[in-house]
Image (cartoon, helix red, strand yellow):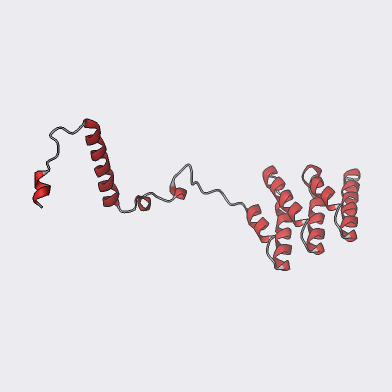
Length: 161
């Protein structure tokens, strides 16, 4: 103990060493007083720009419903997409056509047929892309229905009575 008292710090400690010492002690006090600093930062979703929650549209919900394993849920989702596809809003039409394009690739041929029926009733610029893909369907009934739908659409355009 006497040895410790005999050693004195030098009278003049360099300014760089003082700065480092103050910085080190200050950071230790700051971290010690705040606990874990991460707990005091709000979650990202509450920061207005970075975590803004995106709008969930009906077509997003129906697209999620198309992934359901229950066939009745998927069929109802396609039916509701058919209602949305008759909207006057171009964005809604385009979004519903895209989701119907997903439904046209469903594992069940009945869902695929239902989606093709609705895509055939839509305007050409929205539905034809997905009808073209449906012509590659492994089920011959689905491929045949695509041609029937196109024929019905063409006959309606020729005879607008």
